[in-house]
Structures are given as structure tokens and as C-alpha cells.
Image 1 (cartoon, rainbow, N blue to C red):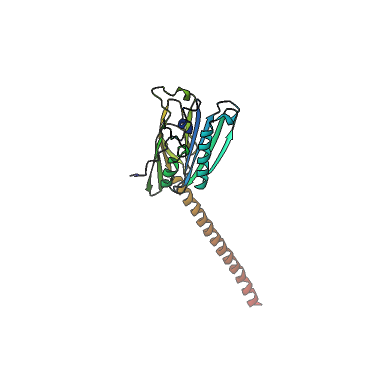
Image 2 (tube, helix red, strand yellow):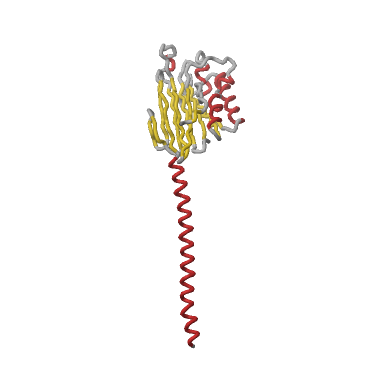
Length: 252
């Protein structure tokens, strides 16, 4: 039976939605959640804002930039990192937040640039992610469920028609099950576009990690046993060789 954790409310970290009345443009949101067998990991958010004047990052709303930069400073104070960069059409901010246990992730993902937006404009899209865990004889399994959404059923925000969002979930102990998304190695990636939603369901099986650790321990034990046998045989061989020599000296 799985032990439920608090819902990790990935409340839409899309600052452009905060200033939708100021920015008739689009957004790219990429999230990554890396979960290790011990419950630690990292949560990284990258937000790309379309430049109103392509090739001119300064054309992005100063209010938006101020909120994004202020959030970056907050992330740094909390032990994370952030970076700002641009291409010919988008300005990007990347925020990386480490956590040492699952419960910490809840606080990390609930924080977003809205806290530095004096207008506190309403959020239009919402994502919800839940994580549970179950300890078994072979290790701990993690189960990530929820949804991501850019749904706009009333088509009231068509300026977001080119919006995209992705969520990549990596279980470093291995993936044992998934519904939807694309599996690549130990990572399942979900991608949606404007007016789309995706149900999230990924299970991480860390028994492979436990098995690997056990196999590694057995290898060390086996090497130790073989070395002990080798030393014993060498000693026995030396003793047997000394035996005939002692007998020969006695005869003389």
C-alpha cells in the first residue's frame, strides 16, 4: 500500500499569464523533476517569453522582467540557481531548485514569480502533480501522478495559440511503469500545446538500484574470499616446499 505525500501543486509557473493583459505573445514552459532513490532530487523550471520585437530582449515588459529577476534572487537565497539567456525570438529564465526529501518539493514548486508581481494577476492555467511512495523488501517505489494543462475551452486566450509546455520526470533508479508520455531511458516526457492537457502517471522502480548495490557488495565479498584463498594456497605451497628441504638436510 502506497503512502500518499502532500500534493505537489505545480501551480502554473507561467509568468506571462501574470501579465497577459500587457503581453500579446506566447510562452514556452519546460519543467524537469529528477527523483533519486533516497527521495532527494532537483526541480528545474525554464520559462521562455516571446519578444514583442524579435531580436530585442529589451522589448519584454519591464514589469515582467523585474518579477522574473526578483524570483531568481529568491531562488538563489534558497540555495538554488537561475540563469537568463535569449535567442532571436524568446527570452528565457531557468530556475533550478534542489531538495533532499519529497516533502521539500511541495514548497519549491508552489513558489513562482507571481510573488514578485505587485498586480497579482490571476493564473489561467493550472498543473497539479502528486508523489507517493511505498517501501518494499527490494527498495522504495515512487509514483508521480497528476496533470499539466494549457486548456482554454472557451478560446478566450487565443494569443497563446503557440504556447507549449513539457514535463520531464526522471527516476534515477529506473522507470517501472507509465501511462502516456514518451519513455527515454529513465525519463518520461510529456509535451502539450495550447488547449491541450495531459494526465501524468509515472512509477519509478528503484529495485534495480538496490539489486545493483547488492551485486556490488557481493563482488567485493567474492574478491575478498578469493584473495584469502590465494594467500592460503601460497602459504601452503611454501610450507610443502620447505618440507622436502628439511628432510634432505636431516639425511645429510
